[in-house]
Amino acid sequence: MENSGFDIAQAQARCRKFRRRILDISQTVGALHIAPSFSCLELVDTAYIGLMKRTGNPDTSDTFLLSKGHGSPALYCVLEELGIIPSSYLENLCKPGWPLATHPDYGTPGIEASTGSLGHGLGLAVGMAYADKMSGHQRDIYVVMSDGELMEGSVWEAFMTAPSFGVTRIIALVDLNDFQSLGQTSRNLPNFYPMLDKLSAFGWEAMEVDGHDHRAIFEAVRARSGKKPFVLLGRTTKGKGVSYMENVPIWHYRAPNAEEYKIAVKEVEGCSG
Amino acid sequence: MRNSFANAFYELAKNDKRIYLVVADITAAAGVASFQKESPERFLNVGVAEQMMIGMCAGLALRGNIPFAYTIATFTIYRPFEQVRVDCCYQNLAVKLVGVGGGVNYSTLGGTHHAQEDVALMSAIPNMTVLAPCDPAEAALITKASVEKVPGPVYLRLGKAGEPDLTSKAPDAFEFGKIRFIKPGKDICVLSYGPITKMACEVAARIETSTGRSAAVVSVHALKPLDEPGVAGVLARFPVVVVIEEHAPYGGLGPRVKQIAWDTGARCSLRTFALKDEFIHVYGTHADLLKAHGLEAELIFNELSPVLTARK
Figure 1 (cartoon, rainbow over the protein chains, first blue to last red):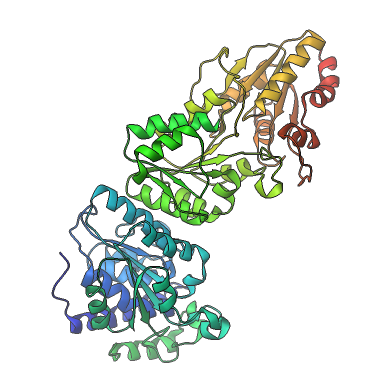
Figure 2: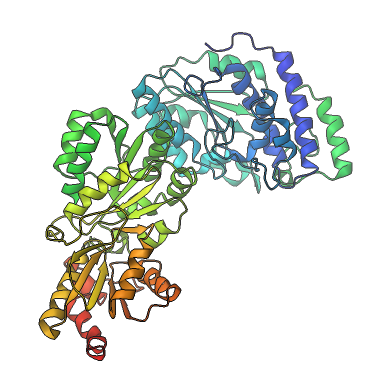
């Protein structure tokens, strides 16, 4: 059973808290990929907390793969919120003797695949979903991807394969922020878009929503037919919530200095998204 | 070897529902055809999409299955190298990667189809086990062992078809992971792996008829982990040790044996023969191409002559 009650106001409050948490951690760890985490935060939160079946037993729970592994802070915040990882893990991110890096590692609680190199998660999901189909496990596999990741050819091999193998229980959520690390995708690769028709043509049920709107994400996934694998394009803003980070490529990697940090905290705590 | 693999695979998969065969539009032999017929749901052709083949295998393995990926060696491991490294090895999953035609076996297809650096590349990845049988019987034993003895990822380097039996009269029984004497001898020892072990046997025979000294042949089916004590024992016991391999001169068995020789203070004469560090545009039989690389029984015997006479 999926969670029937998903409190949108609570979800928004959670994401404000997560943005603040990520900013705090950025003061101790460099190269945290803040902006890509902020752009996928509502997608990760809605999938993990709103939509996923979580029984405490991996055999009966839905599966979550963060294929855009550099968005790990978003996932770590959710795992911390749910008590799947202790707070000490995040507080000691990237420190010797502690398990969390800036990319998720298989074997850490809540991490079901090692990601970080783009274009791997969807292929893994197809194999997992096919295995579930064979074994009769009733579970969905959520895969959060970036739009830049869709430039990898392996992703299209996986898009092609899933419906061909009758795999239906994959829900791919694409963080469509229109930015890759060196610039704006629609300028660099104009023919990359439009995306929705490409995905439909590959045999997926595809929809596009505002990727910062918890309700829109939740309802779109809930309304899927289930007859095909499902891909949701979430239009997002890279660096969402901090005005000077939004759509500015350098914040793909950069951590704010003390002054910038203060401004960012003020803005995210007032953010409605 | 392909047939032998296919039959061994069929026997394994018949009794174990965790075993899948994932191919990228290339398949082999009667055993696989029977499997495909009897268990179509576990025979998956992803099409000409090797990254998908490996990603799919890793996904199946993440759910507790034991998938085999199967195609020509270059496409099994080169095209999807990062899926091999990250999906299979970094996560230490039970994916068995079968590469057909390791070395320059596809002699008429050109360099695009030659896996002459495969052992080096696969051995360099943590968690990977690298296996290369010398004949069809070993191919069957190794296929079985790759499931029963190795929990993690395996690269299984196969020949193609028509390899002769080299092991039915072997003095040593097959023991997984251990070097194996397939021909006895006491003066010279030739170490080899894969189909070129046939040439190692020819070199040994040539040495015996020409010099009257006895030459042993050892099949080193496990390149990683390598049976270091076994190799060290050979280096200590034999006055002349020879390595013959169908592989680039970097990162294969020859350099490893030299390393062990140094580490153990071996005092034997040691000669290694490998493919040249070149893409050679010669087309013909497998033997023609090996010869262009300097690998032929007579050529090797001639190069060994000074060592053989010096130690008489």
